[in-house]
Amino acid sequence: MIQKYFFKIALAFIIMLFIAGCGDDTPLSGDETEKELPSITSAVVSIPIEKIRTLNPVLSLDEDAYFLNNLVYEGLFALNKNLEAEGALAESCEYQGGGALLIRVKKGVLWQDGESFSAQDVKFSVDAYQSVPTNLRGSYGPAAALIKYAKVIDQETVLIQFADENNASLENLTFPILPAHKYKKPGDLARAEKEFIPLGTGPYWVSNFERNREITLTGNPFYKKDIPKNILHFKIMPKREEAVTLFDIGEISITFLKDIDRSTLIEDKAVTVVPFISNEAEVLGFNFNHGALQNRDVRKAIAHAIDNKSILETCYYSSGVLNDNIYYPGYMEIESEGPLYGYDINKAKELLKSSGFEGLSLNLIFNSENQARNLAAQIIKSGLEKAGISVNLISLLKDEYDMRLRKGEFDLYLGGFRFNENYDLRPLLYTGGALNFIRYSDIEMDMLLDKMQQGLMTDEKRKTFETLHDYYKNEIPYYCLLYKTYGFAATTGLTGEIAPVFYNVYNGCESWRVTGVKPE
Image (cartoon, rainbow, N blue to C red; front, side):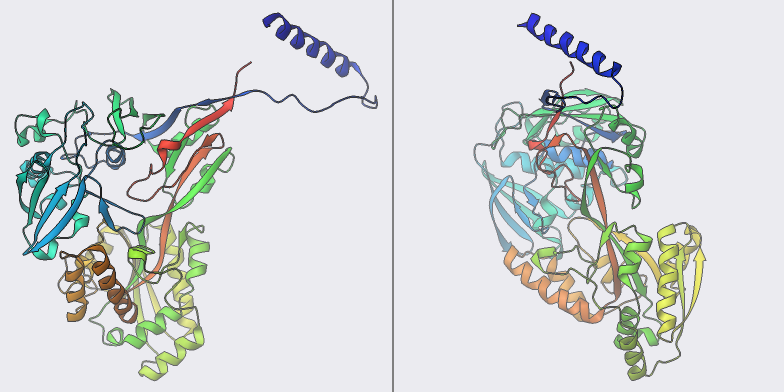
C-alpha cells in the first residue's frame, strides 16, 4: 500500500516537470482539478489567555480566571441569555420572607474526584468567601458578602439568609460552590493562592497546570450531563491581542478580543469573527442640578438631536448595538433594540420650543484620552447645535474628568459603564447612589430598583422590570448611545457552536474541534 502511494507521488512529480517544460501556449488535456489534500480533526483547542495570579475563586480578580472557572465550577444558579437566574446546583427554591431563601440542591452530583456534593458544600462555600478580608476578596466576594449566613437543614437542603431583603435576588447566588471535603476549614481557602488547583462539579477539570505557561482542561468524567470530549489548552501570553499573529502558524484556534477596532488586528488572517454584546454601555449623562435638564422634554429634545447610528459607525467601527436604555439589551426578555428616540432635528426643536428652553447653552465634558468619545462628542455637538443648543466641549484628562464628575461640575457628560452581571443599577440611579454623579432622584424609580433585588421569582421579576423599563424610557436619566460588542476570532478550521455571552465567553466550547490539512 505504501509502495503504491509513493509510486503515485513520483508519477505526479514527473508529470509536473513535464508541464513546467511546456510553453505557455501548449494545450493540456485531461482533468485539471487540483488534488484535495486529506484533512484531520483535532479535539485539542488552543486558546490564548493573559497571566493569572490565582485560580482560587475566593481570591481571584483576574478576568481570564473568572471565565476559566466557569468551566470548572458550578453555582447554585446560572444566568441564561436574558440574564435570568436558572437552577444549576439548585433543584428548587422558595423565599420565606425577610430575605430567607430555602434551597433544595440536586441529588447525584459528584465532585471531580468522585466525592458526593451536598448542602454542606454550600454552607462551606459561603463561609469560605466570607473568611477572606474585604480588601483581598475576589470577583465573587461582593455577592457572597450579601449573605448573613447559610444553614444546613439536611444533606439536600440549605437555608440562605440574606442580610437585607433588598439584596436577596437569585442572581447573587451564581458564585462557584467549593468542596468542603477537600479542606479542614473554610479559612484554609483564603491562604491557598499560587499553586491552587480548582476542584468543581462543572464540565471540565484542570488536568495540567504549569504556572505562567499553560493550563489544560479535560472533560470531567463525573459530570452529570454530557461529558466534553475535547481538550481546552490555554496558553498564557503577555497580551491576548498579540496572540492573533499566531493564527498564521496554527498555534491558536480561537481568541477573545475587546478592542472596538479589532477588525484591523485580524484583517489579513484566515479567521471567522463572531461578535457578541458586551456589558459596556456608552452614555450621555444629564446633570439634574441644572434647571433646564430637570425638564423631561429638554432631555428628550437632546436625545432626538443625537445621531446614534452615526456615532456607532464612525466612532466605534460598528462594534456595538443600539439600545433604548442602559440595561443589557433584551434583559429579562424585554425588547430594547434600537435607539430610544430617532434622530429628528425638527422634533428636537419642537420639544425645546414647547418647553420654553430655546437658545439653551450647555457644557459637555469627556475624557480626552478616549478616542471614540472624542469623536462622539463632535457628533453630539453638531446635532445639538442644529437643534439650537449651543454646546461648549470640555476635553479633560482622566483624573480631572473623574474629579468633575464627582463634584457635579458639568451640564452633560459623555462616559460609559461596565456592569456586573446581576445588573443592580442602584449605584447609578438610586437617590444618593455612590455613582449617581448626575444627582438623579425619583421615589418611584428607587422603589422599582429595590424591588428588582428583592426575593422575586423569575416571572414576577420580569413584570417588575417591564414596569421599570417603561419608567426609565420616559425619564431618561442617562441616554444610552450604544452597547459595545466584543468578538471571538476563530480559525476557519474551528467547528462547533461559538455562542459567547459576556459572563461566559466560552459558552458552547464543548462542541469545539479543529479541522486542518493532514501533513503529507
